[in-house]
Amino acid sequence: MSHSDILIIGAGIAGLAAGRKFTKAFKNVVILEAAERPGGRIADLEDASFPGPVMLGAEFIHGKLPLTLALLKEAGVGYRAIEGRSVKMTGGKIDQTGDEDIDWPAVMDRLGALEEDMSLREFLSLYFGDDKYQNLRDAVENFAKGFDAADPSAASAMALFREWEMEEDEQYRVDGGYGRVVSFLEGECLLYGCEIHYNSVVKEVNWRPGFAEVLTADGRRFGAEKVIVTVPAGVLQLKEDAPASILFYPPLPSRFDAVQDMGVGPVIKIILRFGDAFWEAKTGTNAGFIFSKGVFPTWWTQSPSQVPVLTGWMAGPAVGEYSGAPDETILELAVTSLASILGMPSTEIRSHLLAWKVGNWAANPFSNGAYTYPTVAVPRPSEILASPVEGTLFFAGEAAYEGRYGGTVEAALASAGHLLDESLKYETSDSN
Ligand SMILES: Cc1cc2nc3c(=O)[nH]c(=O)nc-3n(C[C@H](O)[C@H](O)[C@H](O)COP(=O)(O)OP(=O)(O)OC[C@H]3O[C@@H](n4cnc5c(N)ncnc54)[C@H](O)[C@@H]3O)c2cc1C
Image 1 (cartoon, rainbow, N blue to C red):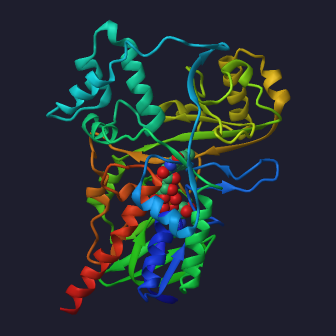
Image 2 (image 1 turned 30 degrees about the horizontal axis):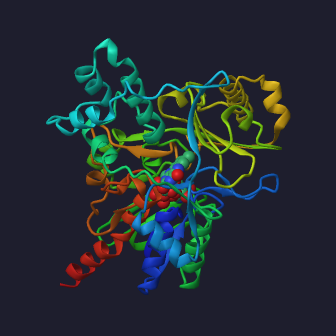
Image 3 (image 1 turned 60 degrees about the vertical axis):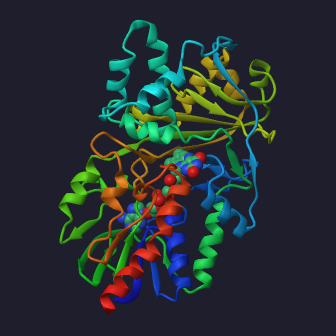
């Protein structure tokens, strides 16, 4: 059995950031990663049929996020503001009606005044239940579904308010994709002497204060004084017989009961590479986002880059019925959806299509969902996850984050940032 000071489960951005931090602090660190690549939900594929990396996972920087931008700077990677008009479209016609009947400030004021939590749906029916608010209710629910991948009947109204009031308008894209930052961190980890084992699915963590033994699916054993668990909350929710589920012994019942009540939203993302930007005949030039009521309701271009690529996004409860569908079926759905949005026959859309890729995060065994959202049952997931167990088990990653940027790369980086201080606290108290 190999032995290390720190064993990290998961080589996503949180695991790699933690790995780098601890190896730089002269700790002996081992990372076990289930997949054959680093990055987890940052999943940039290189495929010669596409003009750049195919970003199946994280793509945007949602505002001037301090840790993300600092890391980009350190890695020498640039970023740029996304551009383009947002259009609402059905049957090939741009919907010129504004959102006058959707009084967002009134919704935010009412949300901000809530004294008792309730689901977003309950909130809407209680305060905006009248028929005249139908469009408003749909718009607010669709935002929660599309942006937070949330189920409005479970999502916490008060917690969503905290997140939405911080929402920044400017969005950015990483030059060449977030995968470049993953490669930078992986390189730094290896440079400072961290061991990274890919294709290593952790199945068991047997622990006692001060020591843990970690077992992989193929029977390897790793001992460590401290274990940092960065797997997604969706993985922590898995039943014992799932390929990536992890059994803790002794178990952590109160923590894991609460984990079951966390919101983990599903997302299916599809990236279509066309021969030309044929949609501009309908949307006009310089379209950034296309919103619709289709099965794939949200689409975006790579503006300001002019490459003929469209990305389709389906998130929240609507994913449910398609989560187990083969990629070919998802492609068919996406093409049909785009055809009805643009008012063109599917065959015409297909005639422009050169290549496609699907990121089905509901079906990904090492993710089991896209990212967390706050529920009425667990409005602050970090309170459940982030507290260490006996100075031996630590939880980090997007779900273990408390703050304004939940469900993002920034959240994962922030959660990893606290770990070194947290674990040193225990070393100090141990030595006392
Ligand atoms: C479709 C999609 C789009 C997104 N878009 C954005 C965006 O535009 N901007 C943004 O900021 N964020 C976005 N996010 C969220 C962002 O990607 C995540 O918050 C962040 O990457 C999470 O990092 P992490 O290290 O916490 O988890 P992960 O990246 O999930 O890393 C956890 C690692 O654990 C591994 N693992 C799982 N089970 C086991 C096991 N049993 N044994 C060993 N290893 C295991 C996984 O393979 C994975 O590599 C998006 C996410 C998705 C899915």
